[in-house]
Length: 125
Image (cartoon, rainbow, N blue to C red):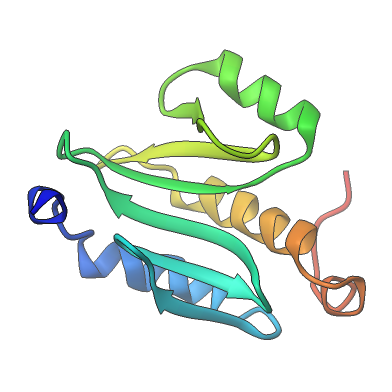
């Protein structure tokens, strides 16, 4: 079975991601077809998984101009093959978890209803 070839995401990483997203209004962690995802209502905020290439990745949402910018930055970022507003990031021992927390919070605010997103404290640029 192909899924057996995918490594499990380290539990510590899932806990770190959940510490950010689980603290946001009505953002729920659940098992995905592979890995773990977080949703607000029926909208996916983030999805973390191990690939058949044994590399760990997380996908999340961004503004269209951010998607293009991250794609051009290269590793650890990539553009996913689905959705015009999806940003991907390779996770490894060099991951900047503070930066990822900000990106995940932004993703939540894009996916959540405005009434929930308005309850999130974010630095203003």
